[in-house]
Image (cartoon, rainbow over all chains, first blue to last red; front, side, top):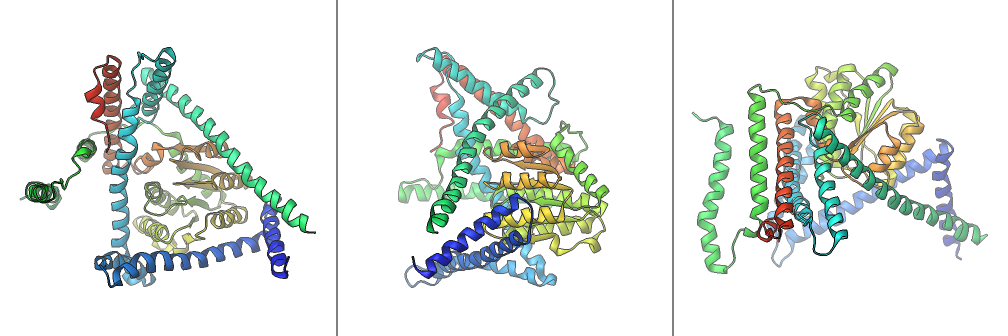
Length: 210
Length: 291
């Protein structure tokens, strides 16, 4: 192992342990590593935005000789508008770009959700309750239909959840909680595997190099 | 004479009608392809019904008709949490998620931030808003400044209330965790899109003794918030929060319009289930097909 490789290995181990030290309590070593991490990420993102957005997605397609996309100057101007925030007197100009982003996001989201989620979900819920595939298929269809409808009812805000609506909403919250339980278990497995990766690094790579 | 607000939708409709009647036949003749995705008319119909419902409810709200919205405990807790922070003389920490401004959850979070800022401005409670993206920083600064200005507390506004922390997900998380342990906010409000950092943030806030309210539409993160926070807004409740907090007729109209669409969806599903169960629903099933 070269001197540089040993340095990098020790640095990695030090940073990992410094971050883990937060589990005991907030301390100056954690504070230092946290600041280094934040500073590094700010620098990294400036470089990333410059290369992947300003150069690759704006400047190069706009200025290339073959079929230049000159109309990209419009989003370019929107981008420049954001820099007016540096001068409080003119910062109102940046609101135009912000309004464009927020407005277009709401519009695009409405369509993509309808297209990708609402309509397909509605279609997949239309299952035959009397199924030729047998009792099991019919049972599953009943579960899906009740689950979707009761969950939708839970998110109905225009009436108090009392009487029939209350019972349906309660069934809905049971469905929601069962699905959260499944998600919880699944995600915890993923997090534990991340921890195992770090511990493996400390034991096998770092301590193993002694 | 028609007001501007009435002319604009008429002009937009006229523009699309003009396109449909003039451009569409020419394109269809020349390229034998329609300029319109006619297979997506079902989505268009739903958008039109949804828009009509929102406009109708907004109109009723403006006319003074009372629009009932049931109590949502998680949203009511926001005001309580800020009140607690005021009593303790400690700040309120608000995180508008970890996504860019082109995510609808972030927009919902920014909208809620505006409401929270109005409450903190009113009580002169310190507010901390760490953000991950420059556009969210700009939008956050705008809504917080507006809230302070509207309440006549412009002098109490400081641009550093909303601050850029770090672009990298875990760098952001480690900095905010440190902030929670050092500043000891009395209330942490997490609204918007969260990912692997949800439990890291919520657990640290819990260890710091803060009252915590979270809201996200990410089903994989909600269990963590439910486990570690005092109140959690689930999915649709996040989008309803801003309207609920504002009580403004315009916003409540939107919320009621959404509820109307939910009922329409339930009815459409039930019709579909009945038709499919009797084996006569093939045509109906196809109406919901997306190309």
